[in-house]
Image (cartoon, rainbow, N blue to C red):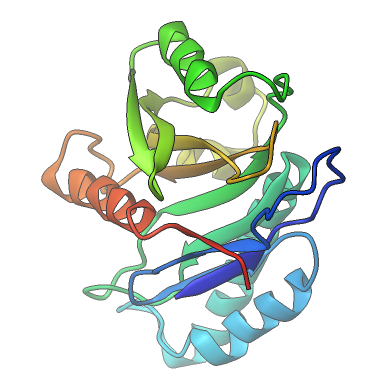
Length: 227
């Protein structure tokens, strides 16, 4: 189980707002906190969690592989933090000899709605806005209304045209799923739980679909923490 703290914001009303959240991670996944303790968490992943490397990596290349993974995780963490990220979740152990290309981020959302507007009304409005080439569905998370948005994302051609060759070769279309939910007893505060994966390179494959289902199952374990 993973637990994370939420930064407390001042409120004009005394409410029993949660101190954080909890969720159950799949085997081999880890949490990287983004507000503090990021460096220590990455060091722990590098030297304690990543005891295995994919098949085909020579023993004398294992440390270089881990360092490359560390740089990639640092890049993801910086990008997530710039976008209001609280926590980054990544798979760090190979499954079937390969590393999964997937991640999800829990982040604060600058929706900025009036505290008097019921969350259900905000979610209905967001659902009505729709998602280009995707779906927006009203769901329930931790016993409260939430929104699930699912879509596909392809790298922008203009971005790829100026990117290095190595970046162009690794830039893949991705399946994305995002849950948007209000913070319990935190008027006007919202978070998102956003998942992204290129799967096995085929966005319609059974394997890619299983990864999306895995993320939905993780969100199903989400609970607010009051301790």
